[in-house]
Length: 170
Image 1 (cartoon, helix red, strand yellow):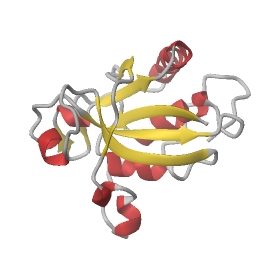
Image 2: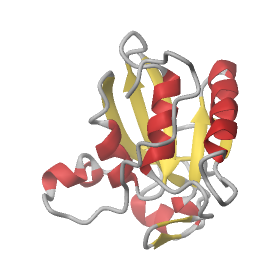
Image 3: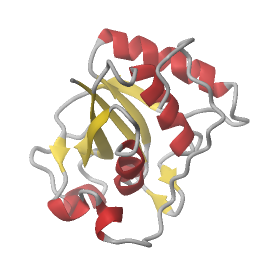
Image 4: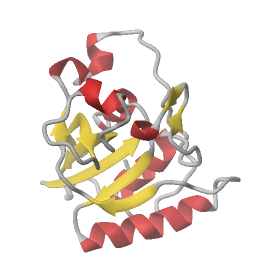
């Protein structure tokens, strides 16, 4: 199993969508990219910790490629809005790919360049090294399953193609 970490606005929708990608073992809501250890939701919401609401994805590379996960990421949020996704605004809602290896960094860069061809505005997604991931409180995990009918600001676009030719598709 391998890890991939993404931030694309409120983690509820990102986690929900990744948990439905075939080959994903688990997607977990949490916080990454900040300077406070053992951070809480209230601290992150203050905007003073530097964290993004993020989702750590554990996946089986024999069933889904990292490139296919990147494709899913570009298709589930608007990567052209700075520090915002839908109605959620603030640095904690920024778009980020946290890479876990040089190979993931290179794949993310290639994928971003390819995805840019499908957006009229500039993609503002950061591509930065993964740091400590802090699991969010239990009430945030699988939020939409616990609260059916709750509004989400994420979507599946489905028109940004995978970069890797013949990649296992999500």
